[in-house]
Amino acid sequence: MQVREPFDFDATLATHGTPRLRRAEVHTLQVNVGKRCDLACHHCHVEAGPKRTEMMDEATAARVLFLLEANPRIHTLDLTGGAPELNAQFRNLVTGARALGREVMDRCNLTVLFQPGQEDTAEFLAQHQVKVVASLPCYSKENVEKQRGKYVFDKSIEALRMLNELGYASPGSGLGLDLVYNPIGASLPPAQGELEDQYRKELSELFGLHFDRLATITNMPIKRFAHALLRDGEHESYMSLLVNHFNPDTLDSLMCRHMVSVGWDGQLYDCDFNQMLEMPLGMRPRTVFDVEDLGELADESIATASHCFGCTAGAGSSCGGALAG
Image (cartoon, rainbow, N blue to C red):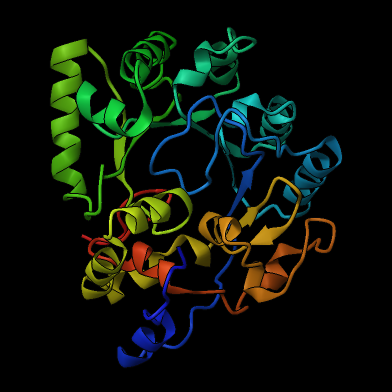
């Protein structure tokens, strides 16, 4: 089925007296090291899964570390996938970035920590003070497994317990542990602060677990989730929901303004969502080997399309959660 594109993001910006989005100073390098994952979640905008073979190679990973060293204003390396831990370059990227004094974030699905060959991954993350951003779309077993598959919830709880025992989310440990929520279906996330309080209460009382903060992320109408919307006849109504809740107060904080997204093959993008749609950085194809000073990207135009309503609806959405109060 073909997705119809009647929703014009740039036209909506114009009606609010706002020009096209442009880049500000880059402070985060988000790197998708590959699409292989031990899960195949229904909402996954990457369409990751156990059969995907796309993986970052050694030369591209080395160039990422070169860019980090050459651009000291970039303070965060954000590693994502797939399950980033399954890539052979994951630990080299972590150790290299930490040696440069950069913060490293691992977007972890939790269940990967029990995969063969990952037995010491949690300890590795703690040793290098890697911030863990863990997917947990609900504190309810039924809702988690509806979205992510059977047996995922129990493994996720066990992984969080293991991280807590290593010191994650303990005051003064320096080991950050954030959780990520996204809706099960075609709806906007609830208020982030209120949901965080509920998560904290339920996980503490039921399992004795602790975390630092909760990020609520809107399901993006692309790839696997878009296919589900089309299949169920909900694509147009979901897009209308996003458009009708467009919030101009989110624009200054959009992740595309302060981040460069790197694909597993070294291609550069404005954000991870544009990466999955193969919309290159500013609509000009470039790779990590074509640039050196990322400061020169400031004020470049950002590639936009109808899926950008997903980041600007309601309280807004980014890899860090809600953007507006």
